[in-house]
Image (tube, rainbow, N blue to C red; front, side, top):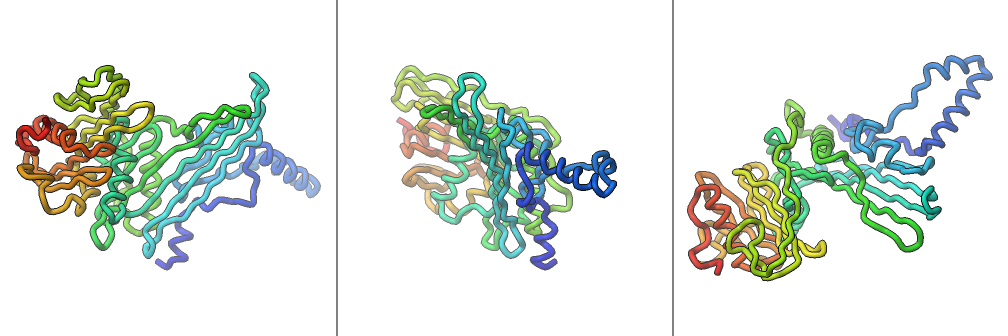
Amino acid sequence: MSETDEASAVPGRLRRALPRSRRGRLLLISALVLALAGSGLGSWAADIWLWPKDRYCWGAWEEDSGPEFLGDDAFGDDDDGSRTGEETAPTRKRPSGRCKVTIAGDYKSSHDGDEVSIRQQVSVEYGPVPKAAEARLAMVQDGFLGGDMVPLPDGLPGTVNGGGGLLVLPKSCDTSDGRPTVVTMDASGTYASGPSYSQNDPADLGGAQQAAVLLVAAANRGMEAAGCAPDKPLKVSSPLYDLPGKPDSIYSASEDVCGIRGLSLGMEDITDQTGAVTHDLQTCSVRGDGVPYLELAMVAQPRLAAVFDGIAGERPVARGWRGRGSIGEDHAIVRADCAGRPATFLMGASTDPDHLAAFVNAAAARLGCAPIAPEGAAR
């Protein structure tokens, strides 16, 4: 198949010449019907006219298909709100791409008369994980292995929450140097009212379950365009079972965090949130005033763990430690055999070896394998 064939096989190129607002569409439809009326076709046009729905993200998502950001509710009270899309589809020769849906609305509040402005985006990235260790850890761990993420259902290698997610694609989509290709999705946005009030207001994906469906749909389209799709499309058919716990307040500087005995940050007025706790994945985040102080993850699901291949180094973290690993400027990574299979242990925000030792040994004990850090390393 040629590059031209590949591009034409991917729907979703937006019809930018047509009006995006609801009022604009109604005006255009009315004008067309009136024009056709002069030729005797007006009643026929009024009866059968169906305005084609827009599609986004390489054709994966259809207008009015469920999530709020794809429907009229996304515009609030703005009758002229707009939804636009930008996209670059992956190809066989260039297996990376992105798509972005942007929602814009401006109206006067019926409550207090203030001018309200809505700007929201849903962004999807398709491509291999970065080569550099720090860049890869920052992208994957910081963005998609926090305490608010849960595993994708149906054994799909990835994580999701109500604001986005990450999916690791099959090996057929790996790069020539062995790096996995991933699809990530992220919702963002702001709501501003009056001259001084503004807050984060991400686009509504419809909850974690719907976000998983959106992510997988985009991944299937991306793989088709890149020529690496499996025989059967990936599918979300089961509900999400492993929901994250609510953030818990830590009031004492000596209190343990993440439910791990001996893991204390020596700080007050912080919160921790524990996400998945399974044999494939364990996550926890510690924050204070929205600032991350500690990000922990254990990944044993083989395809998700493959994201971290080649960046753990060849030596132990320190003398007496099992496995291989390193502590960098912002992240730490350890890989070791645990209960008969390799496990990857990650730490972000903090690079304190004591924090890492407490976490890896607690996670190893839960999995039923030998300690990874030597006795006393977490003291």
